[in-house]
Amino acid sequence: MHGRQLNDGTDMIASIREFFDQFIEPASHSAAANSEHALQIATAALLVEMMRMDKHLADVERAAVAAALRQQFGLDAGQLDTLLALAEEEARQASGYYQFTSLINQRCNAAQKARIIENLWQVAFADGHLDAHESHLVRKIANLLHIGHADYIAAKQRARAATGVPPLK
Image 1 (cartoon, rainbow, N blue to C red):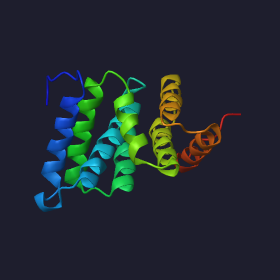
Image 2 (cartoon, rainbow, N blue to C red; image 1 turned 90 degrees about the vertical axis):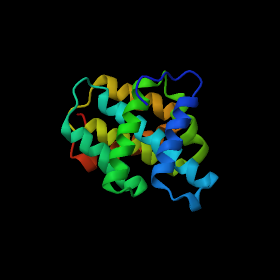
Image 3 (spheres, helix red, strand yellow; image 1 turned 180 degrees about the horizontal axis):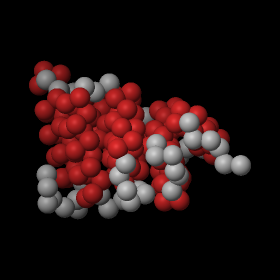
């Protein structure tokens, strides 16, 4: 995986297939299961990108990413470690967010996409400080996921409450 370039998305698809093959029994190979793992990687890559936004990686942000992925997808520790490593590699190599958000748009309903935005906010708030770059990224991803303003604000408020970060006065 290391050193590959993402030109047309084929390397990302190959990485998704590798993850899929490692954790899903061959008998259960189906388009739905493959699509679910693509969704997991896309979601994880966005959360990892949020974690990297403020230029200092805090353990609390990494823990927030892991908690969101565990809750969202029910992964065990080994699957979670592999998914995070793969997502970090994909986020480093990605030239934009569309490849991730397009997978999410294909597979998720509005409530699931709002939950992803809430997870992004939780990672942003995890260190107790909201960086301007973090706020910008959430807005950008919300737009790409076609999240309405009311759902965007509600997700932000739920994340503030969950992380204990007080609202601005």
